Length: 234
Image 1 (cartoon, one colour):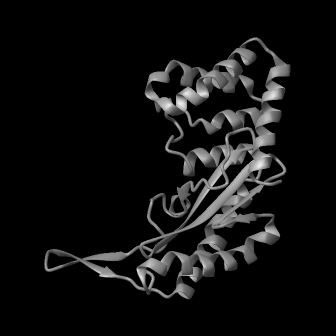
Image 2 (cartoon, rainbow, N blue to C red; image 1 turned 180 degrees about the vertical axis):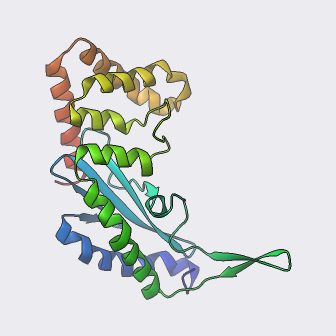
């Protein structure tokens, strides 16, 4: 838990942390927007992460995507602990727990802003940057996205919508069709607002792939990439 007035905790943490993190990642091609950092690799993989501080707790979250997906530079993504130990723990949590005389006792762990930033920098160097280094190409990014950055785990029969973009990058249109079929056939399972926005797009892309309409597919990819580059100012 960060020391200080709870109202000011987040503001001061971001002021300290963002400046220090930017020094590390800017030379690697990452751009910054407030507390969010992002870059697009030569293979068309979107890599992004952010700092987060709430009620004295702090963490780093990350996300992988394709330029052919819907992208948002303020998307927070998954906890960095997903690639550390597979959990959703924050880097700096409010309490530590122990059992004393059969009772659960919570101990507040207080750290300074400098210590908190140090913890974030250490996690960045040890875990996230090597992870981003391994996921600059399409196939690895797709694989690691499913393993570490998605509620859909490898081996299930469901899909992550981002797979559409990754398969488009790989030009594996048969798999794009398979994912689209899954979403269309299971339309009653999805958030109604989200599906209302996506249904026409998914059905038209599905029909284009089914009919081998290469012109439509290329236009679709070009427009998705344009929107992504506009969002990330690249």
